[in-house]
Length: 464
Ligand code: BGC
Image 1 (tube, rainbow, N blue to C red):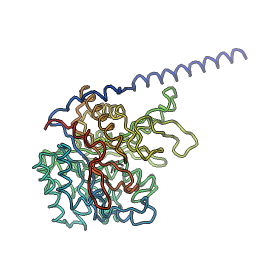
Image 2: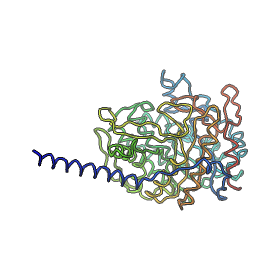
Image 3: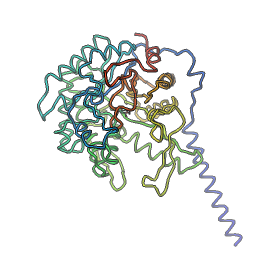
Image 4: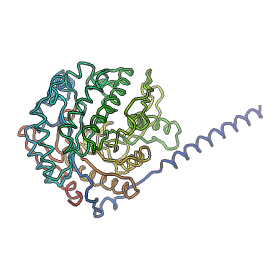
C-alpha cells in the first residue's frame, strides 16, 4: 500500500513538474511587454517620410443610398439596434470632396476606402459607368492631394444578385469576384497603390455563418467552411486579376486579429485554450495563403484542401486591431472556452464587447507574431475606438503610434496606419450608436465636426 502511494506520489510530482515546466516554457516564449506612462507621454519621435498615415472607411457604412444584402437585412425588423438603417449613412457618396478636405485638415497622407460592388455591378455583368467614374475621380483627387489610395474590394456587403446565388459560399463566387477585381484593376489600377481584396474574412464567416447574426444568417459549420474556402478562392482570383491588370499592385487582406492570452499563465489548460482560439481566429486565413492550403476545423466539420493561386498572392499583411481577451478553458459551455476583456482602454460599449480595448502592447505583440509567421510588411489597416465623449481616442492613437515605433525599432517593417474611422458611420448591427469617427457626424444636419483625438492624429502625421 505504502509503495503504491509512493508511486502515485511520484507520478503526481512528475505531472506537476511537467505542467509547470510547460507553463514556464510557454511564459518564456510569450514574454509580456509593457509601455510605460512616461513613454506614452514623452514628445513623439516622428515616423519617417513615406509612412502611410491615414484613415479607413467602408462604402456601405458611409455612402448612403446602397442596395445590397445588408440593406435587405436592415429592412427585417429587429436586426439593427433601434431599427436604424444605412439609407443615409454619412451621405459620403454626395460629399466626397468635403470628406477629402477633412482628411487634408488632419495631415493624412493615405486613405483606405472600399468600392461598393453592388453599385458598380448592380446586375450581373452590367457595369455602372457613373459609379466607376465617381470612384475614379476620388482616386484622382486623392493623388492630386498627395494622398495614397488603398482600395478594399469587399467590405462585407454583397450585391443582391451575388447574395441570391449563395454569396461567398457560392461555387461561382470566386469567378464573379475575380471579374469585379479585374475591372477595378483595369479602371482604377494606375492610381491605386494598395489593394485589399477582402476585409476580415474571419468575421464575415463567423458572424454570417456560425453565429448567424449577419447576412446570410446561417448557423451551419459546413456552410461556414464553404464560405471560408470561397473567400480564399475569391481572394486568389482577385489577386491574380489585379496582378494582370496592374503589375505594380501591392495586395493584401485586412485580417481581424485579437490578442488572445491565457487567463492564468500558470494554467496549462488556459494556454491551450488561448492558443487554440488564436490559431482558429487570427491566423487560419493568412496561413492558408502562405501554405496554399486551407485548413480549418469547426464543430462537426473539417476543411483541408489545396487551393490554387494562394501562395505568394499577398505582398503585405493587413492588420485590423480592436480587441484583447483573456481566455480560459470552460468545460460544459457550448464553446468550451470563456473569453473576458483584458485590461486596457474600454470603449463606451463596455460589457464583454469592448470594441477598442486596445493597449499598445497588444498591437505590438500582434505585429511581432504576424512578422514571425509571414515575413511580410505590415499595414495596420484598422485601429480605433468607439468613444462618444472623445476622451480615449487620442490616448489610443498615441499608444498605437508607440507600438508601431517599437515594432519598427525591432526591425519589423510596418509601413502604414489607417485609423478607423474618418467619421462616425453605420456600425453594422449596432446602428449609429458607436462613434468611431475622428470627425463627429450630426445625423440630422450631416455636419462633420472634429471629435476628441483629432488633434493627436494630426500632430503625429509623418513629415510631408
Ligand atoms: C470592421 C469595420 C467596423 C469596425 C468597428 C471592423 O472590424 O472592419 O467595418 O466598423 O470593426 O466596429
